[in-house]
Length: 68
Image (cartoon, rainbow, N blue to C red):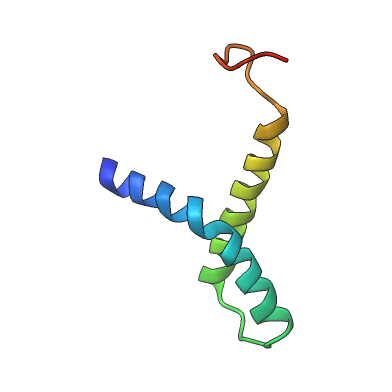
């Protein structure tokens, strides 16, 4: 189970930005047919991107990092 979880983390860490760019180009410019699996993958990628952006500005109180 840990290998599956780790592979998902690795996959979405490196592939979330290209997925969003690919979906935007393929649907709006290349007129590819709509696919529910790609929509779900795109939504997951957008949620992960938003989580990354939010986590840059909101840090937990008990973090061990350097305080500014």
